[in-house]
Image (cartoon, rainbow over all chains, first blue to last red; front, top):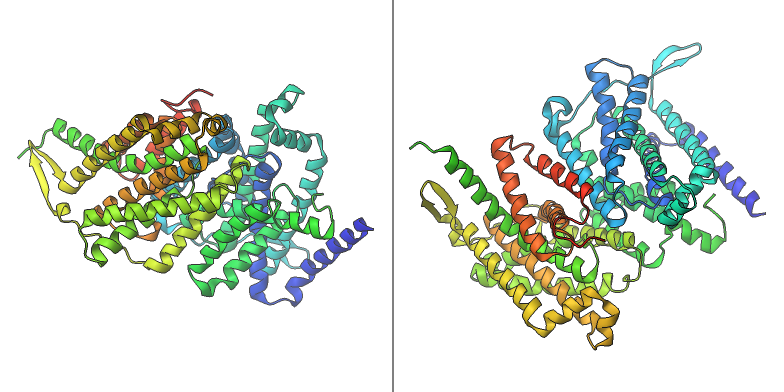
Length: 317
Length: 292
């Protein structure tokens, strides 16, 4: 009975997403697209933090790598969106693996401080290396992706295309991560979270899994970053500060660590907060900080944990 | 007059050590909390910032002497530290490490943005007369206030060393840092020690905030970078080691100034951070930390 209810819920959600651009207001469609990109990044972080238990405070730096990588490739080399996005995201993954090689030697709070340093280093590179990254002004007039539609030829992306494209990626990620969690790989990640040395003693190749997971998380961050850059058509260093990294961490904690829908709920909550609390000015961040404290005090499982308790639904799968 | 190369290098090292002495004050509070309370306090920068603001309030707005204002600010911010310990960290003491880290971020957000509400976005200046006095000797320039900061830093260090190694309270603090349960068995109240540790931590941060605020300015966002630098210093010196923090602060200060002078000012922060990250990865327990 419960699984039927869950299926119906998912169907309704998908129907809503499909119909949204047709009936919804344009600014809402825009907002949902941005939220979708945030969800991609947050889900990537959730793989690292939620499933493997490594709290990263520098995730926005990887988003920046994808964003700047794709922007530079398309502006300097005149590449189209598709190859530049793919190359930038893959390069972020490779760099993530290389950095992970060093930084994953650290565990627990040490890892968090290490990623904090990494985030700060990359941010100051984005900010100061004006010849390549445009410095504090950033890079502007990035190309729009192009799409081949039968009958219409090659057309540039409009808002509606972006909306469907981003949500398709989110959907694929939900399916993919769901598969991953029940696979051997996912189970090994969770084993690392629960007890790293025990996982090693029962034959998990901990070092390799950790680097793979870090690279996967970096790849998704880079992908989201590239989308972010080309969707807004301009980027600046302020989108990739340590403060932004901390926002990503809060998103997945508020949503629910190590759950499939946690990052989705968390992203929406954060975006809605920033939208409806705009009138409050600085009070917005005060409220935001207090939400973090309240969630950690009373509902460590985030929104998902609370819903599980109230509706007795298993939202983890 | 021709300024020789060696004079410039000495000047840079001197500047670095003066910058480093304000880092010492910030890092000390962090290392105390880590050493005794086993928590990385992500809200430490907020103590620094609020300390600077209280200093501004007491000295410039109320017209008291800047050093009296600093002392008062230390007491008030120490109280803030106690409140954060009592209402945030103590109830969560048994939680996993990441909870304590992230709750610190929540406290930091809250406190920093209360700063934007109360202080407003404009930088505030703490007026201290010595900032306008500059000493010159054998080709070197030293701002009097920087020298006073270094002096206060030495006094604070001496005071802390005296408390830790010569008083019963200090012995209790060290006992709690070694083993909380055993300390309780011999009649030490860990909660009281924790309160004291957070008080001292807040007070040191406030002292740094006031003094730095008099050299530059006070604004709500001023806490974040120094907090990061303090993390690095604490890590560099070995978490929880006081001597390590002092050496770390001086090294980081000198390194930053030397790189700014020798390579490029733009990337001095980046390069310093990068070197420390590498060191951190190779030796997470730092130079003076216990191996675990």
